[in-house]
Image (cartoon, rainbow, N blue to C red; front, side, top):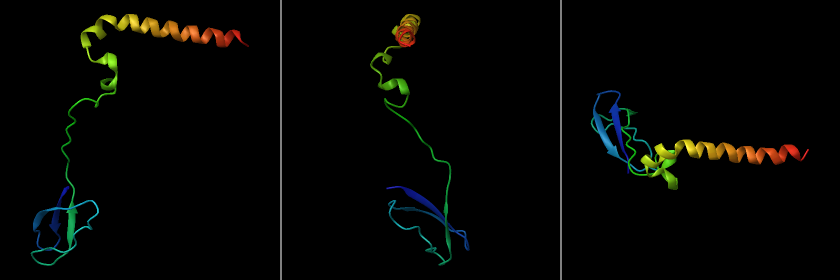
Length: 93
């Protein structure tokens, strides 16, 4: 469950509350009974593990040494395949 930071508008009391997403926002200060406001700050996000980058889920992207050596040949194969697909479509008209 997430932790939310609150601050009282009257007395300035600050505290954290662990609440579910479905729980309503707190509105009354536990110290003085004044109105509360929810504080928003910068959130530290860390992406760990596989699947963050687009190439992580591809089978051939696991070894970077083979990508560096075979990068030019794979680009040539891709362009020749696209040319082969384009020529039958243009001759059919």
